[in-house]
Length: 130
Image (tube, rainbow, N blue to C red):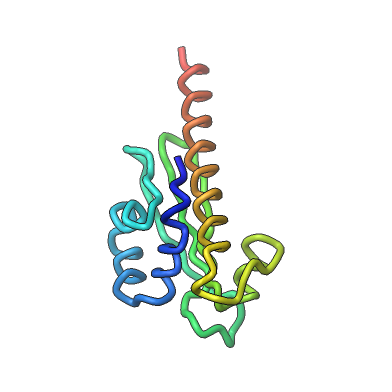
């Protein structure tokens, strides 16, 4: 379930190097701290890239990949300072300010959708098993 009160906190990934480092090294607890709880048992991988060569943040586009029992789902955390990263993730530019909670809300909603998708895949596999 998405807690929109945590939406502004997503920007900490881009304003706090310690949070960004922890996200890569310990994604599950760091995502929970940011308001994105993940399903137990799902493996979590962080993949970073640049939206454009001149982006301030490196990486400027973070992909969170969850895998469990053959199913997978993912969502993005693009930098609010990178129009190119937002364009790559969503096909549009939501904001250019780290203080704007619009991007955080989008990330939280996408994370919730990804978790639901993974859960649905696991239910389908379980129902298909003899």
